[in-house]
Length: 362
Image (cartoon, rainbow, N blue to C red; front, side):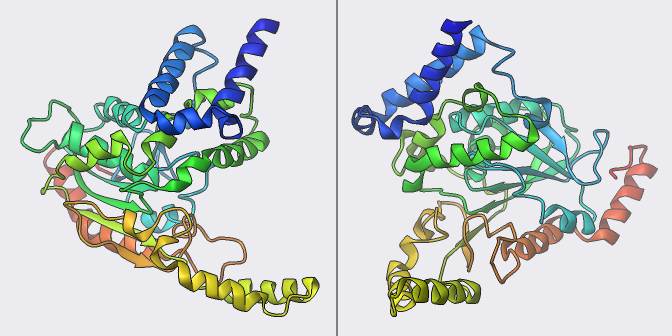
């Protein structure tokens, strides 16, 4: 037991805290080898310690959200991003339900290689009703999972999909780094954030940082990674509409300005707010939503991204000290109503299904 504990601690130090060690120089020069190493570690651990490496049921696969039950059929599947501590969809779900949409979420080991997550989605996709169509919404890296799944598994261009399950009606990608993000190099801080969220839920353990993946995703997310090069070479299927929404931190909010005035007075720096606003303005699109630059949002086959004033999480979550509601939410609801129809149209479709001998959808 002592040797096992030491082994786990060593792996945690290696996987989570490597940015603070000297080997980061080697990994910067050999990202593909580092990725292969991290995937191998994950596979070995899953083989040697299957129970310890298994995520709790509420953190893996399809999970009904809101008022949805397990015997319902989803209209919408939500896919979170890297090291998501939970809550990213809490403000959106009630409005989707108000639009008469049944909402499920797909959860996965979000530190693992992105293509493994797409493979896992494909594995679960086969369990859904093939006679239906489903809309996919992804935040941050979740949008890349969607792109990989749709273009490689469910709707590959110039190939016949052998995957059963529903067709994808459309996709919405929110704050997705389609061309990568340098912030992926700071994944360690996202991991710590997720651990802090796990502790009050009773999910934290020495295995927590390993069973969620061993960090290959942060390599996939870096600009010009092999994963992104392959993904961006792959054409997007024309029959699957897509909408891309991104954020840009254009200026400090009134609440932030008030806080800066107080801080400026306490520190005795009279022009602190002016200095910060000058820096803020000079960053332009390179700052983006604070995690994903505006230039990283676009990809071939998608329309021009819609840019709204918001931070990365603030696109979907009411943030502390923020003065505005999450601006991506009304855009998402509007788009899904366009694709799925309103409550009246869905009621007509449900009645038609019942008359045809099908089970009701809601």
